[in-house]
Length: 234
Figure: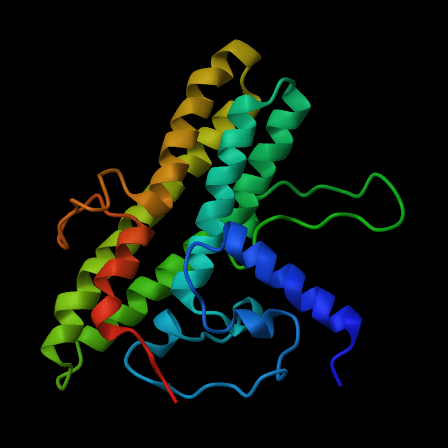
């Protein structure tokens, strides 16, 4: 029997997904109640990239996890730029770093008792997810019996992941500089951070006009490149 509380939780999840989810993920229902619905059977290539990866939150795919953390990074880069005081800037930058790589985020201590709000990112990290995604794609494309469509569709997506990794590494450097800088000196750095964080998902060119081999594509373009390999459900 589905209780009203459970229905409320599911409705809340659906609302959150509609507002913030950058890619339609088939496992989103399992984020709250694993096993509430029967697990669909995946029949396609790159299962960890497109369907489900071990170790990710709720066993989401590497691409989905990378895009969620990229979206969080872009959101908090914008908050840091718009912040009116140094404390708010540092808080936003800390959230941004956690979304990119939890290992480089500030080691904050709880300043009050009771329920303490968690980090906005997934806890897996964009860099870890994008690194795993690119590695999975290249390993599959290098197999002797790999279909031609795999290389044609997936290798450009791996380059998009590479771009996101390069941009995120630059963001980490700039974020540390901005956190240590005086207010006036930090503004140009925060502007650069916001631009780079936006590129993580959107790329540096118009997503409609970006060619598959374009070296400036982001994770959003990777989704389009991988569409020919979209999972089939049964």
